[in-house]
Amino acid sequence: MPIRELNLYELKEKSYVPSKRMSDFLSEAASVCLENQNHSQGVELKVTGALEGNIQLSWEETTQQIRDNWSDLQEATEYGATCIAILLLQEMTDLKVIRRSPKGTGFDYWLGNKKDNDFPFQEKAVLEVSGILKGTPSQVNQRLKEKMIQTEQSDDLKLPVYVIVVEFSTPVCKIAIK
Image (cartoon, rainbow, N blue to C red):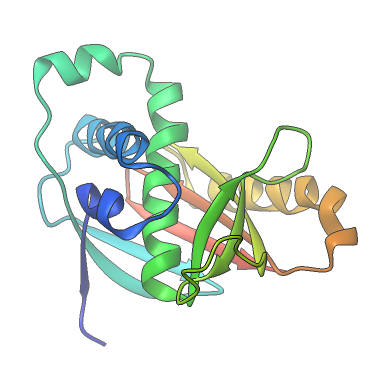
């Protein structure tokens, strides 16, 4: 299977949600995390779990001002993982993010059909995202289990649930679908 290429800054062209400004925010966070872990342009992200593949990542190199803005690496990890998860989901499925979910629902985003351009969009699935800056495979698996349990509060929706955990030091992305 050929390696797919994704530029983190293409999120703003490829998504309805997040908005263009929010997309740049998320892309900056992901770039900071990748560079913090000493990755360079073209690093290969291994996607495992319910969806599999290898993705070559590129991004706009960060400046000192951007790194200073994202000195809270825990926050950068959360938002950076969101950037990568949304791009991967749109690249590897027929789904797109259509709306942010409020806190307390057990998931982060509502998903709709990628080909549907008519508002209001029809909800087809939900997405929960988590990030780990530097972790082991067992930590990634544990986080995935925790997030799967967290999404149980939305089981009454009877929609597919996508849980994506992005780990930046390897980098690896693990995906579960229930």
